[in-house]
Amino acid sequence: MSLSLLTVSGNVGKINDEGQTRDGYPIRSFNVARNEPVARNDGGTDWKTTWFVVTTMDEYVLEKIATLKPGDEVTVCGPFKMKEYNRQNGGTGFELQIRVASSGFFSLARPRKEKDEAGDQQTASTATKQTFDNMDEIPF
Image (tube, rainbow, N blue to C red; front, side, top):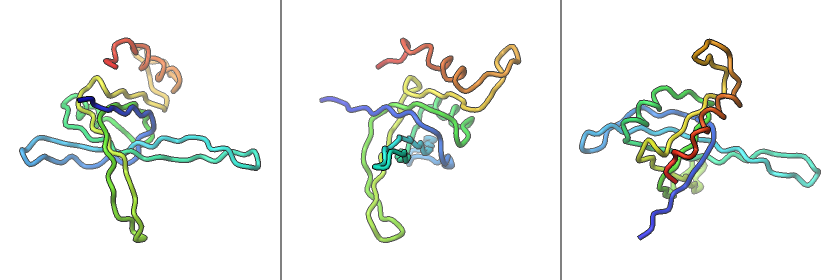
């Protein structure tokens, strides 16, 4: 048996309220938007947004979700499934759900300016680079 995993990097959208499983374990989800450029016939560029729903019960990831804000850049990895739903206009929609089961499959990079330990401002690219410097530690 093989397990298919999906890795997505994008920006946090809506952060849903914490819930509980039937067994009383905490569970939480948030939406991630992945924006990709699409070339137009006139040479211009449009942007296509694909939304993902990320769900977890992992204690470490639950703590990190509590610090998330819309617009934060995250990378998640986990098993996925396609869920069908009814749109308000009567059509059928689909959403891709990713279950993050371990802290090794979640990374957060703040896109806005933050202060580092020395109190200096750092840009989003610096924060992102620092987050991904330890790529050798990711278990995939």
